[in-house]
Image (tube, rainbow, N blue to C red; front, side):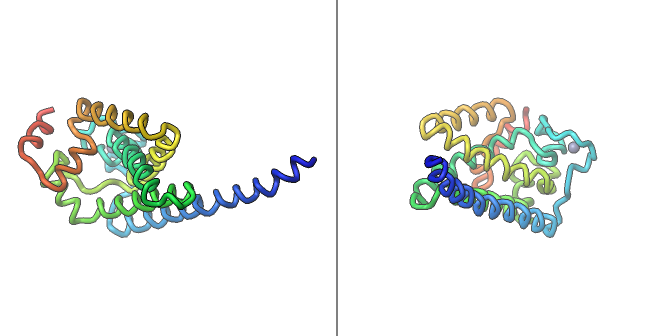
Length: 200
Ligand SMILES: [Zn+2]
C-alpha cells in the first residue's frame, strides 16, 4: 500500500507531462494538414490507388503515397533534430524537445511545399513534373521524423551516427539520392549529379 501511495502521484505527474507535448504535436499535425491544403496540395496520389508504399522513385507515385524511399530521409531528419535539440535545448524535458522536432519538421514540410520550392525542385532535381508532395505523404514525413527522434533516443549518439551513415549509403545505391544530395542539390544544383540521378 505504501509503495502504491508513493508511486501513484508520480505516475499522474508523468502522465500529465507526457500529455501536453503529445497534444501539442497532434495540434501541429492538424494545422499543417490545414495549411498544406490551403497551399493547394492534393490529398493523395493522382493515380487513385490506395497502396501506402510507393517503391519506385522514378514514377509519378513518388512523394504521393504515405511512404516511399524518401521516408528514410525524414527518419534521418528526426535523428539529427534529436541531436541538435539535445544540445540547444538541454534544459527542456525530452518530450518538449520531441514536440519541437515535430514542429520544425512540419514547418519544413510547409516550406518544402510552397510554390517557390516546388519550382526549384522541378528545375534542379530528378523530380520532373513534380507538383509538390501529397498531404498524406507530408503527414507521413512528419511521422517518420518523429520515429527518427525516438530511434535516436533508443540508439544513443554513436549507434545513431552509424545508422545515418548506413541509411545514406543505402539510399545512394537504391535511388541515387539521399539527404545529403537533397540538400546539396537544393542549394547548389550540379549538372553532373543530376545526370547521374537521371541515368538510373
Ligand atoms: Zn500513385
